[in-house]
Structures are given as C-alpha cells and as structure tokens.
Length: 319
Ligand SMILES: Nc1nc2c(ncn2[C@@H]2O[C@H](COP(=O)(O)OP(=O)(O)OP(=O)(O)O)[C@@H](O)[C@H]2O)c(=O)[nH]1
Ligand SMILES: [Mg+2]
Image (cartoon, rainbow, N blue to C red):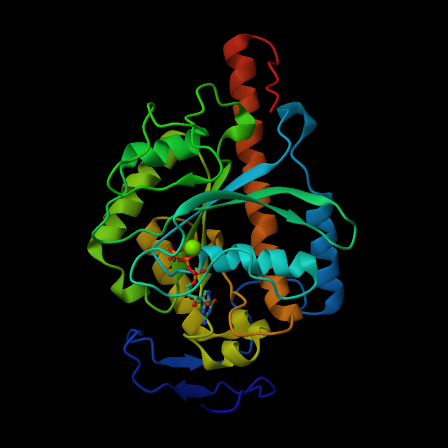
C-alpha cells in the first residue's frame, strides 16, 4: 500500500486494488480543508472529551441514572467492537470484553447492556451501550421485538432467538419499564466499506425499525465504521478522517440512504488490529459518543415535558 500523504498539502490520489469485500469506492484524495469542523487531534482534546464523558449524567429532572444507547446494524458492522473500543479507551489499554469477529451468523447472540468504567477515576460512566444481534438477510428481526427493546421490556442478557422472537410472554419481560429502562438514542452501526452493497432485505429491516423509532421520537445517529478500509490515509492516520474525500462521499451516501442529516453520520474507526491506544482513534470515538449522549438528553428532556403535560405535574420516574 502507498505511504501516507499526511504531510502533503496537495491532494494526492490513492488507487486501491480490487477487494472482494469492497465496493467501487476506489479513490480517495486528501482535501486541504476539512469537510467537517472538529476539535484538534491532540492529547488535550482526547483528555477533555474523556472528562466530559466521565462527568456526563442525564438531567436529575428525568430521574434517569444512565443514557441507554442502542447499537444496531448488519452482522459484522462493528457493534461489539464499538463497545470494546469505548471500554478500551476508559480502561487505558486494548480490551475485548464483547466477543467480536467474523462468522456466518451474528457473533453476538445475547442482548447486553454494557456499563463502562473509567479506570482513572474509578467512576462508571452514566452511559450504557446496548449491544444487539446483527441483522441478517435470512433472519428477519420481528419488528415487535425491536419495539420491546426500544420500550425497555427486554432484560439485560436476553438470549436472542431468531426462530422465537421476544414477546410479552417471554421469560424476563419487563412489564412496567421506566424512562430509565428505555432506549434514549439509537446508533445504527454501518460498515462504511460496503455501503454500496447493503442488501435490500437489510435496508428494509432498518427502515422498518426507523419508523418505530420515529413513532417514539427516538433520535438516531449512524456510526460509520471501517473507514480505514475505504481510505488508506485514514488507515495510517485516523486524524485525517475529515480530510478524506472518500470518507466524505461515504458519509453523504449513507445520510441519504438512512434519511438522516449528514451531521448525524459519525465516521469512526474501531480498534481491531491495534495493540496500543491511538489518540486519534480515541477522539473520533469519544466525539461520537458525546454527540449521542447529547441527543439522548434531548430525548429524555422531551419525554419529561410530555409527562408533565400529560399529568399536569412533574412525575419523575425512578429506575
Ligand atoms: N478494519 C476495521 N475492522 C473493523 C472495524 N470495526 C470492526 N472491525 C472488524 O469487523 C469484524 C466484526 O466486528 P464485530 O464488532 O464483531 O461486529 P458486530 O457488528 O458486533 O457483529 P455481530 O455481533 O456478528 O452482528 C471484526 O473482525 C472486527 O475486528 C473498523 O473500524 N475497521
Ligand atoms: Mg457483535
């Protein structure tokens, strides 16, 4: 592979060889001006974002102890790796608590609401990452199952069963979920290197889910992963994410496909082959997580306003 052009001020064009897993996105140039404004890629930024996330907590008015973020997407897109990446950042070293890898079917078979502990301060983040089974063409997720997840009826460690979806009769069904049990923001985790070949059946499933999310006013973002496979410059230096024309193109395309504003598509690179932490990868992931937590706050605030309007007074729900 060509050497990075990170120090060059002139656009440089890289051409990749054919890759069976990739689409026609074969060229990437380095833009002088970033296509999205981000804080500087330096240690100070990473530390500040970490601090903000450690100090983050939903408004006390909501009575909610932690924001629940649902990770959803096609098998192998990098959902579990995203949790592992966040966990690694706050652990201070590469960890892989959630099983990740490649397999014919989803490697994640159990619904997990992961907590993340900051090992520096000993504090647990007030954000939970809810990891799900990957979407597959041959196993369509029952739309009612996704509604139960969104509404907080599904318990932690529920074993997904494609042949018998979760219903009100399933053992462990949470009958009276509080606001704190619900999903407060959804992150669609999508593989940025295969966006041109997302199977129709997967898109249909995601659209059906989106309409249930929209009915509930739940905010949605996209974590666009594997952009190191789209742009060789990003592979070598994740801090060039916002200078890469191929990444910009991928972000524009997926925003279109998902019907979301471009600013809601957050390009990242998960830890996968690395053995040590990289400040640039950290910044991208932390920034994405912070934006998601802010959206979760908006949702919770709106829910409290709705409850106040419905009850005529503030009814706080406790977890
Ligand atoms: N190059 C690269 N590989 C990645 C990235 N994110 C994840 N991977 C790899 O992609 C594979 C699948 O990642 P997982 O995290 O298991 O994906 P998942 O969405 O949890 O998959 P299921 O649980 O099977 O649905 C693993 O081999 C990861 O190492 C990324 O940003 N870049
Ligand atoms: Mg997984």
